[in-house]
Length: 404
Image (cartoon, rainbow, N blue to C red; front, side, top):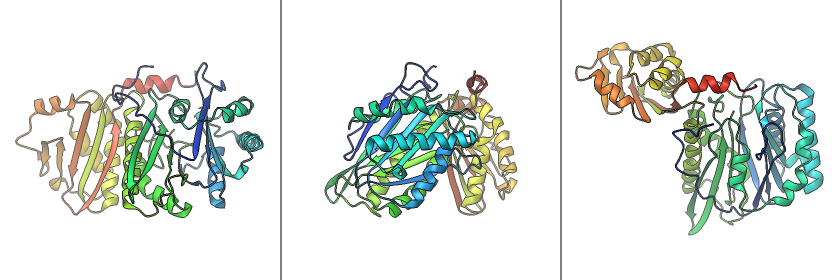
């Protein structure tokens, strides 16, 4: 599969995060001759937070992680992720697979099984061949090393065309604090939370309740503001682990929050840029809405519209489709107060095409790889920004053949 034209030039060099080690192995779940299972082992002082899909048909792994996080336990922890099979809609088989993996890994690592968090991504409705994973656990645990995060990023890919990673280092009280994360996601991406898996690690020291609150707040500004195809996965999981190895307390620290936000937004953008068949990265900004909720409704209506997305794919400046999306969104809108821009180009205002607008200018703008669509509703001060991609024939090709 060709790498997305929107892919970063290279994967960033990922730092060692004290208190966590990683390994990846090939279990042959679906893919041959590539790693498809990753393990992260967290030291005793680590805290873990997570947010997950709110799908009514979420996977056995998601349900298990939610239950375990609610227990509020401490101690060493582990995260194990497989690609190639989502372990979703598999009835009691799915629960049995999670139990078998966690029990076996607990026996090997001596980590409480209620501190072992799993995830699975891939085909829905097929029993997970968990025995293949269990057979690799000894090798995985033995191979765990501080430098293994980049290999972990590659092991969790499915239809992704490139491994996704982001990192930053912030300074708190004169001490460096590292943050690094990996993600997978390419299709079935929409808020709640836009099939996406994300794992972020930091050596900061943060109590679990504060870590959970911070993660939820920043998710609403990042991963819940992206969409590829409007479809919410059964398996979406985002987990944040703070090992405390730096000895720096980052609880309620604005510098740490800003750094974490940057890492999360970078990963979220990479997911969109690897949207199945994507050739354009699109920012949709809505301003002057009746309130922020209405602004978000309009932004998502535009970003999810197949008509808008196919026009972008065809480099057609069909602004009428944006008018349509505003109107169908359910948000309060006034036709005669609406303003639309493509980048800096004024396209429409006061209920009609702008006198200064030319189709040639619009068409030239649409040839860019990264586009900005702005809509001002002229009502109040509500605003929202979301990120999406175009919809090409490549999306159909990938998904028509996904199980065959």
